[in-house]
Image (cartoon, rainbow, N blue to C red; front, side, top):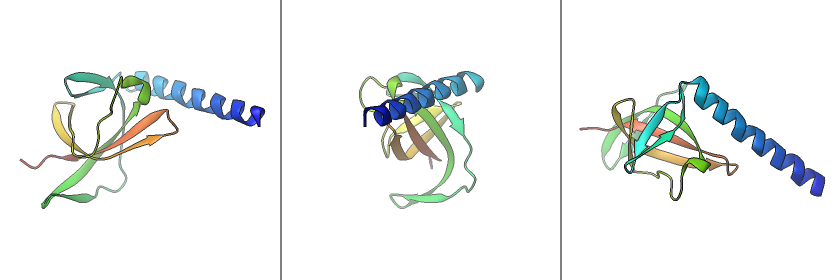
Amino acid sequence: MVLQRGLFMSAINELSNDLKELQVDFGSQSFTWGGSSYLCTPTGLEDLTEVDLGGNVAKVTLALLVRNASFSGAAPAYGDRITFDGETLIVVSAVRHHGVYTKLILAEVNR
């Protein structure tokens, strides 16, 4: 059991390190939330979908991967607004993966 846990932790550390490398490879991009900037890795979405946000339909436009170590407390959650690449986006999903990173699914904000 100890060996399996060690292998799991090794894989988690490797995943975290890989995400750090991706952040650099993507030009150290960041988003702003709650007055702070956070490094992230943008990902494309294959199927752009629309979501209903309180009676307003918004198009899902982007997903961001963010290392959990970036957050000193809470992370963005559903309904929060972030700014990425000069555009304000709304969080429609925030899922933590393996204790290493959070995947934020973002939609355009209807004005």
